[in-house]
Length: 214
Image 1 (cartoon, one colour):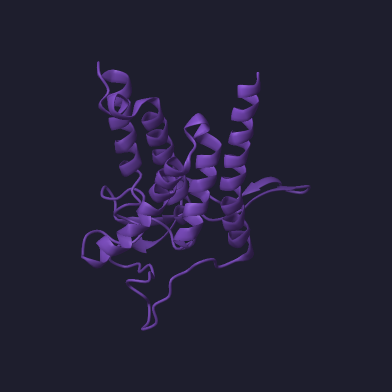
Image 2 (cartoon, one colour):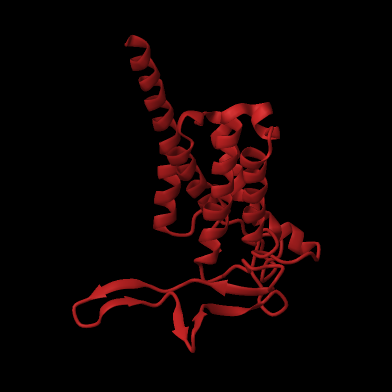
């Protein structure tokens, strides 16, 4: 599966794009942490609860969090989160949930190692892998999903019981390895995310200075 650093990098880029006026060091840290949380299910799996890329990779975790946040901020007469942290806390919470789903679960679901994103309703791993291209002979060609007999098909390497996902806690062999970056595109992504934070902070300072001069 992609290294956790890649999940964090995607989360940071989401935070830079979505936090808006709520962007600061604390907010981007919360969002980056949210993107890393799903990979903690490797520890939970080692304890015999669910499995790696399953327990915390379930889409029901961010969906449940989004439902609770929506209820608190849009349905209740008085928002618990809004009363304590104002609009800032609400904005950061929504972006953190987006980072959990998109940056925390997405890269693993779109990798050959797969993710059991329907857990606990299903303990089967699914891998959304393939390609999308335009051909002068075949037109639009996509191999991510297959449609057969009215069903949407995804590649599945097995279930939690039959498919082992190697992690630094539960390696395939005796050697324990912690992935940092595993390819050139991952390195570009991490460097871009690292550069985006100070650039965003610099632009924010320029905007505040310009607003004060008006």
